[in-house]
Length: 168
Image (cartoon, rainbow, N blue to C red; front, side, top):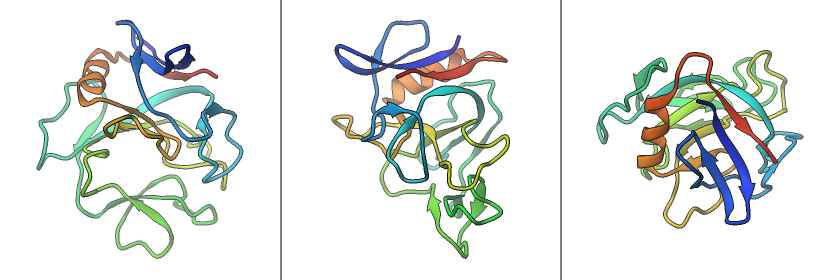
């Protein structure tokens, strides 16, 4: 079961074999990612890496993915010249790093996908995740955002070797 993100007449959708469901992507749409912060959701085929969730708010999603409860000091480095660029870090962090523990609920479930991580190319882009959508599906910074129900349903079906396919 690959998770496929694509454009349709109805807008951007995600499908894991149960039919297309609405999702949100970056303001630059689905395209070839050029650089950090370009607002693009990157075209490509990416492996699922790992799952984080807010155990203080939610039950652990059912999935075979490696998973751990998110910690308050978890962050993701988005500073291109740092040796930990596009990697999990702990706050406080000396350079720019996104906080994963948010007041909003968008990162209550975060799935790390294998974008720009093998090898990491400084400045190509970081922190491309699957996460929860805000009401009304406004744009993400470049991630793919779904409802809690849809993300949990997709995660429950992930099997070894499954991938995220993002098509323009």
